[in-house]
View 1 (cartoon, rainbow, N blue to C red):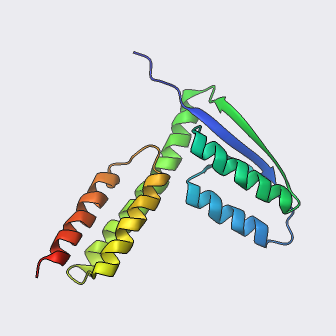
View 2: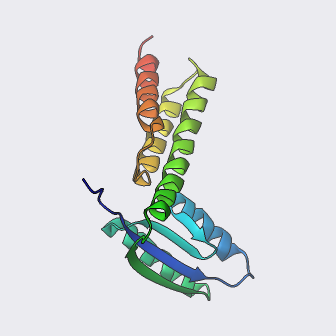
Length: 154
């Protein structure tokens, strides 16, 4: 049985080197949406209405900052390239989930309601860019739920 290919939305862009603020801002936003970096100035996300819209907004910001940007919809011609993109996106989400797990371990029983609330919001943020769930996802959800349960019990 053939595995379904992933459709991708690509953002190709070029920004002036100076000032550096738009480049730094763009880098942070690309990280926040979970984009995979293919080359300098070329990033990808699975093609969904939400991801296409996110890249459209970023393309507008790039142009406003004096750069050039274009969007492309495509499939990878080579399954190994596709696997590399998926692995990159999955790895970033896994690292984010692991950071939450590490924080819970360090804090132990010193979790406040505020901290648990922040962790739940962070799980949501990670979930928005978790297109290919890693094994750490389930563990992070279990750990945050367990922390919330422990926090409520005197």
